Amino acid sequence: MPAPTLQELAPAGHDLAADPYPVYATLRAKGPVHRVLVPGSGECWLVLTRDAARTALTDPRLRNDIRHSSTWRSDGGHAPGRNMLQSDPPLHTRLRGLVARHFTPGRVAALRPRIEATATELLAALPHLGTADLVTAYALPLPVTVICDLLGVPVADRAAFHAWSNELVMPTTPESAAAASAALAQYLTALTTRKSAAPDGTLLSDLASEKAHGLTAEELLGMAFLLLVAGHESTVNLISATVHALLAHPDQLVLLQGDPDLVPAAVEESLRHNTPVHATAFRFAAEPLDLVGTHISAGDAVQVSLAAASRDPLHFPDPDRFDVTRRPQPHLAFGHGLHHCLGAPLARTEATIALSLLIQQHLQMTLATDPTQLTWRTSTLLRGLTELPVTFDKLDELSPDT
Image (tube, rainbow, N blue to C red; front, side):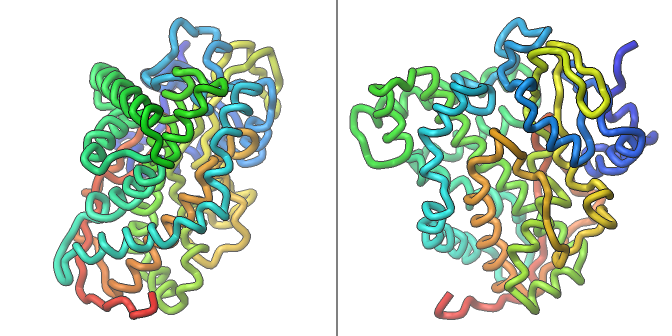
């Protein structure tokens, strides 16, 4: 008997994309690990509790390389090249080491002026009074600009790049995902070739030069793909989900307006409450194992629900409540273990700056639509708003020393 999908486990008429958390809570109450069917990917073991998630994410017998899957027949998807997310040590260790120094807290701190300038410019383009979509006008262009600047993607190419990226992480059809993968692979190959011939000091240029030191063409393509896509998609969702949560909980917005020092805590609470990377990439059992009391056969797929783990009531009292004063914040939004998100410092910095400047300029914001009309787009990994229409009732100019 095939395993059920999460939608089949939801109450009749329930919009799983808009609110998957009741389904997670029901499953989690029955046990930490359950067999489910992921449409388009097949059956897997879904991990739902925080303790089980940490165990799974550090178990060396669960591998990211799809060749450990019992059903592997191809690369299993449309990601170009070979990348860190879909590899294990020692390859993962080598690839991560090539870029880790570019995403340290110190390096990210040096990017703050550019991030602040970009956010300020985007805010200046918003209407002083009236309605705007904060996804397309703010949450999206900010991280796209930052990661494209860092890696060296020309301004004229960024709209096309994001369209390909968005189709890959949240595909509309298998055919469109395959087409986007091919287009993005062709573009990145040409771009890195140009940068290898004419270095310009950007991260992609530095990586292109590593080809002479053992980085293969396939690995360079995979690295460029992962950094560009992962470098902005989750942050778009984080910024928009944080604003959405504050508009849905105006008392929490008032707290931030009264105490801007709470903004970093609000970002952490948003990461926990509406985890933008909803689940990890699939891991595959390299051998039979026991995962917190559940037998996993060799070749079985395992997926960790970071979203469910970050609302585990054993670790987060009243987990469905959005509370910017919550302490501490041991969420798993950025994963855990070897594959902990390399870009976490950058995502946190971008979201904190975006939120700080937004609430400083716009003291009165309201959702410009019925909350039930909002659309959440989901994939096996990500979950985020397609748009967030907001009405601005009053504009407060930035202070001169901002």
